[in-house]
Length: 466
Image (cartoon, rainbow, N blue to C red):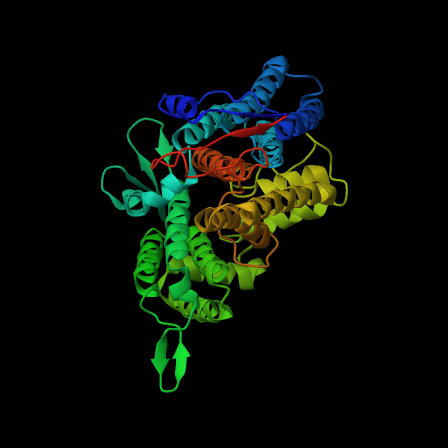
């Protein structure tokens, strides 16, 4: 049986402020709901075990926590049923699982911060819904490419402005408008830069991938289309350099080169990217004190074990004490490590849940990245494909950089572990990020067809199969 919404009725609905609830089969939402129930059981068990291990009794607010977790989980499913009925069923449950694991460890080691984290989580869910309401169609983001770029630039420059800019531990990453409210604008700026890069690369794909310039008897790639976006990228890297933000500088570099390679399929850009990385690393090592210090600690941490390398050295002792199965939830001894629940929450998880716990964490991120790549592969436009790819790259490499820094594969950068680490700016921004992924995914759903035949305003004819 096939039912079709008439063009006039559909256009009338499109004129409303809120989108209508589509009464069509939503098998992905049923799958998502089942996964969210499973995640709720896992996080509830971890929370109860951590409380019993640390205090030998359940806290008074246990019921409140379980109800809050259930409310967040099921509200996300309701939001998706309404605003993104065909979105990927894996993304939200995986993110809720990561968020819950992180919250359990934050409650364990820093109860006052856990209250703030719960508030930021609730705000993240609200902004998730708001993002889906605002971004009804991904191509609308493509149309406002340069406005989005301007907003990203202003956000990146904000920590350098007097009065509102804050410098913490040598890095100018935060802004404050008075009171306890402190925010990292670069967290939102990274999402906006992904949208800009995706739009620009999708528009200039042929010029960037097909040789059009002639040198002698050979055709080579013309550098002209790359100059504007390369200039913007260098500008962003310069801002991050002035702010001493090593982690996000690495993330933006990786993002730019990866998206350029995905858009063009030219390995030439990877070679150029490696060359630029070597030059930039040498320059940063000699002219940025924080980079020099991080590299020194990376090369010989034991030399600085009683000073600037103490944080990492203590972390490795905790990693070692965790072993295969961990010391047990609520029984760890890592509380003296600085910034345990923010920069080094991976260490807290590794000590109390052991190698098995960290393996679950890595597998969860791997599944999340796989879901993001699947969304990109199924996207209906080049812009949506590149946007989904860029957002997934941010999540994947941000997690990789923190893992690699703690395990001494790369210099430690101190960026936050997505959805797990304490930090309101990162948590809220990541919920906005997965909202954009959900929008892209919902547009590729098998139960509806998009066409431009109804009107010049790109009306959509919904075909629901039941």
